Length: 255
Ligand code: MN
Image 1: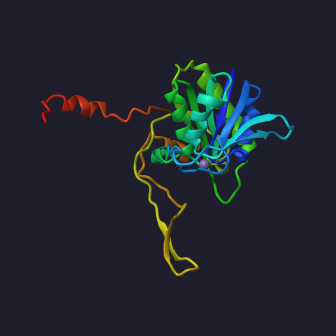
Image 2 (image 1 turned 135 degrees about the vertical axis):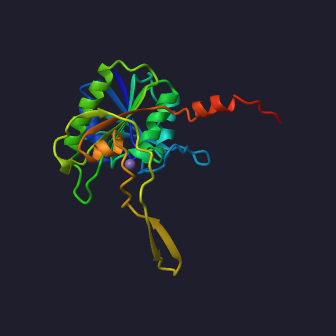
Image 3 (image 1 turned 90 degrees about the vertical axis):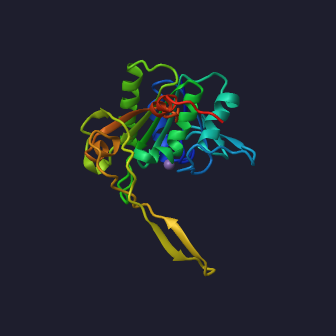
């Protein structure tokens, strides 16, 4: 099996390195990932700058892949259109440091990379580890669980273009209680900005990292994640509201 591995934390991120080690026993892994962290880049692509690439070797001096001075979606697009000799059978994005559940799915560069893969009708999986800051993530342990989830997804024979979002619960909650297939919790998070003054006397705001607590939505990703379950959510990128579309087409629209 040919696997394209990418992420939004950057090619040297420990989550990607740990996941690569787990995926090497599943197939041939080529990494095409951003040269620097691109968290919350969502599905942005680079138009006004060149995508400079650099070959990267692993710790055994073997070919690992390419670092791209671009966004996660750039990486997948460039990999599939130009860099890879053979098209991959599977695209994996992660293992992200921090969860990508609820509406954060829409800000996530990790998920966007997987979505880009699904545009090309590839099976694509985004995987993130909820973080219990300030305690560091044990990426090796997380990658072992991620590999089990990937195996379960592949065993289900997903049709090409299938897109999945996986989140692993905070490690301080202990061994995950199980794997649940759930929708997103789309309630808004409580968020705040830090207001301060820069060295030149200008006022600035900086989005805090203390977002939390969307209104509970039983049987949703956020809630199950908080309870200590691994969550698996099938996604689609067609943003059309088909129910509304059908309803709107009940009347005649004229210009
Ligand atoms: Mn990230």
